[in-house]
Image: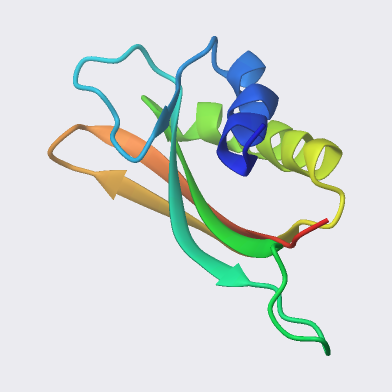
Length: 114
């Protein structure tokens, strides 16, 4: 499996299978999650390049109200930590999309090659 499919499998139970890669569909039931791979960095060794990659991933959690996102935030952290024990949380920010009228939690994690 790929990192993306492993991450989707870890997060899908939290939002009723509404985890989407790169694009959040219009009129999707909330809460929902959008995953974006921000960067893939090769994991080089003393011997040179390896076939391992480190990933930097943005997890956007969308919901109709702030309270729902606060509750879901901890569950997302726990799911990522369980699936990827070496993951490092880089950022955790709150946003509001006035056009969609949705609250958004922006969680950025680095997942090293294991």
